[in-house]
Length: 425
Ligand code: AMP
Ligand code: GLY
Image (cartoon, rainbow, N blue to C red; front, side, top):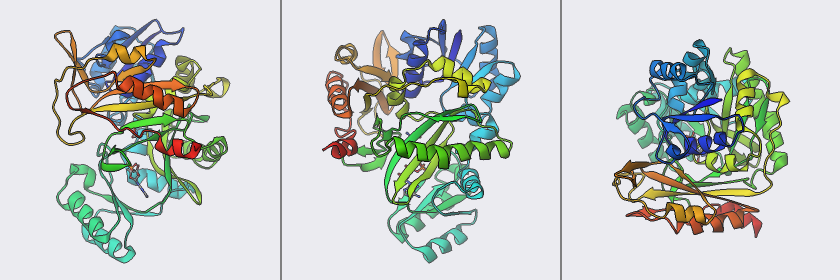
């Protein structure tokens, strides 16, 4: 089969790497891809992932059998619908189903209507009413811009002042543009977070191994929020019994609800969960694989990703086996100094082959090729991934790989998987 991956991050590199593993894969393409993906796929940098017409035309001209869409923007923009209309199979939700991520108000209303556990909330399009609600309820409280804000439109306010400032920033100063014309104000949930990604064909849903992201920039979960500084799987905060509970109380009811609403959901459903004293509750849904969670979940998948994805598209996931490794995987993100604020690009990266020689996988996120050299081209630059028998061994192996890679002003967190390691003590 000829397979086309849409996207250019670490998640897409991991997807391409796992798809390559399938005996069914003849040739891989990537739009636009990255220098890491270029080793296994033909990259097509001149097509923009959100240009549905151009992607469909490329898929037609090249006889693509399956398109795998990584990021949310093309999903929200109806790329899967456009491909389906052209008779091309695509893994990922259609536009109406992708709204589960694109609009927080939609997903919160859906959960309320169908009794899916989540924090209590109200939606406001009027800043004065939002302020009055905060003043009545007090802190801690959580303020979220309604639309897509690249994961940055959320303020967990520990004081009333912080909450009021967040409303001003989102609704009056329009810090996130149109995404802030409505805000969702939520009850604060105390607990530990876990990500459960799941494959679904719209009717059957199968959870992948649970993973945990590290969203803060610095050790000890300090500093600003980022796109994710590392991850590990399986996350012991979600033992198998909890994953089963989540499947029964959250994943299955959600896809049934989406079907009832006329938004049959196919692809990967990402449930961001808080494990509270009252059980797991939804923090957010994403309509795609998580990044960097994918970089640790897919190495543990021992099944055929092409077969699983085709079953999701064709509606026969119930017939497919999804075996998992009993081991663990860890990814450490190497970032450019200054990230998530301003950072330099163009620094030469060395030691990639040495990290691989330590037994690590290296998935590229923000890199470019210049004069035959790999240079930095983004805030999150690389994922160094290690698989081992348990989390502790995987952490040690990942940092051995990390220590072999060098570029100017590189930094990473040194405490990835700390919560799992503390539990193992
Ligand atoms: P979101 O973009 O909705 O995933 O929110 C970003 C982050 O804010 C989450 O990963 C949580 O760490 C935190 N968060 C969001 N909603 C809540 C909540 N209701 N209670 C506590 N923390 C939250
Ligand atoms: N790791 C968080 C996300 O993919 O949204």
